[in-house]
View 1 (cartoon, rainbow, N blue to C red):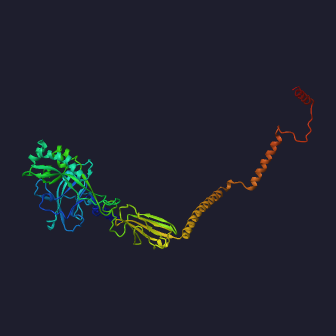
View 2 (view 1 turned 180 degrees about the vertical axis):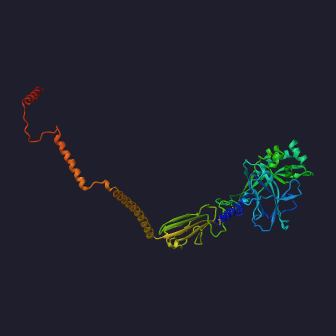
View 3 (view 1 turned 90 degrees about the vertical axis):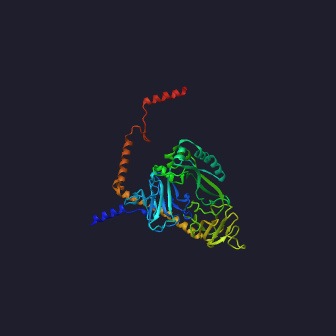
Length: 490
C-alpha cells in the first residue's frame, strides 16, 4: 500500500500547476486604460507593445487597476495570411504550465515567454457571450531591436530643438528621397512614414526632500514611425513583415519589421534616442507614489518611513530631527496624537518646558520624567515620516540593571576559571602514577647528597684544610729565597 501512495504523490508534484505564482511579475504586464475606449479612429484600435526578443510579455484581458470579471474569454491573433481572419492563440499543452511558452492564467492574462519575431502582430481578447464588443482589449506586439542609445533628457524647449535636429532630416528623406528603399515604401507598399514622438503619461511630482516649487515631473517620449496609406493595396501575396507593416498604425523606430524590409532606413532610425521631458512641479511628498519606498503610503494608519526606539534615564536629554525635510517643507510633530507647532512647548509658560520644538522643526526633551514617555511622530507635508517611541526608567533601575549585567560578566569569568581548575584536577588524577611520593623524594635527595660528598673527597684540587701543618722541604726554602732576591733587585 505504501508504493502506490508514493507514486501518486510524485505524480501530483510534477503535474501541479504554478499559475498562482506566475502572475506576480506585474511590471512586465500590459493593459488598456478604461478612459481610452476603442473608437472608429484607427489610431486607437490597440495598444502598441514594444518588446525585445527573448523577453516575457503579459497581456491582460481587463482594464488597468481592475480585476477580471471571471467570464469566459478567448485570445485571438490576426492571421497574417488573411487579414480578415483571426484564429485562436495556440497555447502550450504541458501539464506543468510554467513549461509552456504561451499560456493563459485563470484571470485570462496571456503570457508569452521567449518572444520571437513571429509573435509580432495583433492580439484580441474576446468573451464567449460577446460582452467585449465595446470594451475591446486589443494589443499590437512590435518586436524591436536592442537599444544601446541613452535617451535625451531636458525641458520642452530642448525637446523642440531635439526634434528639429533629429526628426526633420529623417522626415525629409522619407518624403523626398528617391532611393530604392524609399521608393519601395511609397510605390510598392503604398505607405508613407513619418517620425513622431509618442508620449507616456507623466509620472508623479517628485517633491520629497526638495524645496517647494522645485519638484520634478518627467514623462518619456518614444521614437515612433507613423504609418499612413497613400493608396489602395491588397495585402494578399505580401510576405510576413510587409503584412505587419501594412496592418500597423505606428511602429517603433527600432522595429524588426523595418530591419528586414528596409535595413538602410532602419540603420538611420534605430539610433535615434528617446526623449525624457522634465518639468518643474509643486505638490505633496508621496514617496510611495514616486516608487522610492514601495508599500509605504501616506494613507496608511501606520507605516512610517523611519522607526526608532529610545530608552532614557530620568533627567536625561534627547534631540530629535525629522528626516528628509527642509525649511521649505511643512513639518508637524505630534506627541501621543497632540500636535506641537514650531516654537511651542507642552508645559505652560510658567513652568520650565521639558518638550520643545524650535523654529527649525527640531524637537528637544530636557530632564525627562515618566510623563514624557510616549509616541513621538513627525510629518513632512502631511506624509508620515518618522515614529519614535520613548521609554523613561528610573536611574536606580538602570543601575540595578547595570549591576546585574556586570555580575553576569563576573559569573562568566568565575565559571571559566572553575572549569579550568577542575580540568587541571582531572588531568592530575589521571596522571597520578607518574608523580613520586614524599618518601621517594627524600630518598632521592639523600642519595644526591651522598654522591656530592663522595665527589668532594675525591677532588685533587681542593685546598688543604685549615689547622693543617705544612712541612717545608729544602727545595721549597731555596725557591722562596730566589723569589725574594728578585723582588729586591727590582
